[in-house]
Length: 185
Image (tube, rainbow, N blue to C red; front, side, top):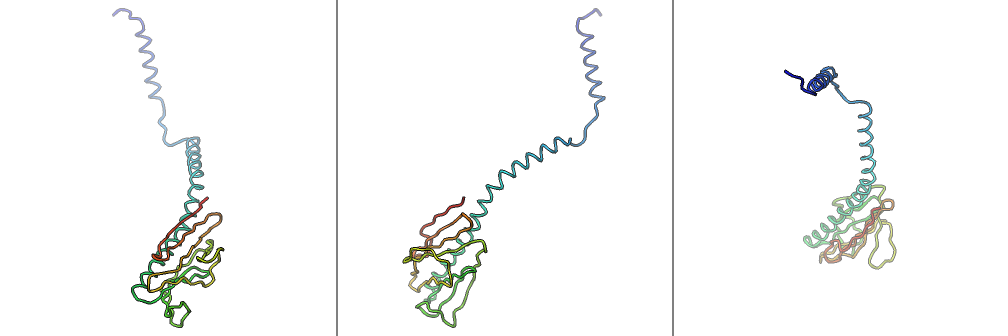
């Protein structure tokens, strides 16, 4: 065979390249730099999501007692109509509870029965505003009556936690939420 330009150089390069791959040690695991980089990326992602989720947690903490109050109001209205006796929701410092009332005027009676009690969290402030009042008031054994006719007093309830708040107003004919406003900063 004659001289072919570039063949011997090509063979030498291929042989060197093959030797390099054969002599190369196989790595098992990751370097410290790679591990630190991955941990840094995870910390960035968590750092961005925690502030976003804290607003969601505050919203859920305020919406939970609001949903319980809505269900309690619907139940009180339904039972008052069904059993033809007044029912009441009593608000106190610990939360609110559903009561069967013996007297139609709403006066406390000796045979008042508490059917269920919904405690509110200590970090949630509850305030009420009756239809004839201009100011929000903290509940101190206040009663919201549900008559056998299905009517109830219009009521606005404000739940707050820190700077976040949720206000709901109830319709007097249906005891359902008529209006809702909120701020979850």
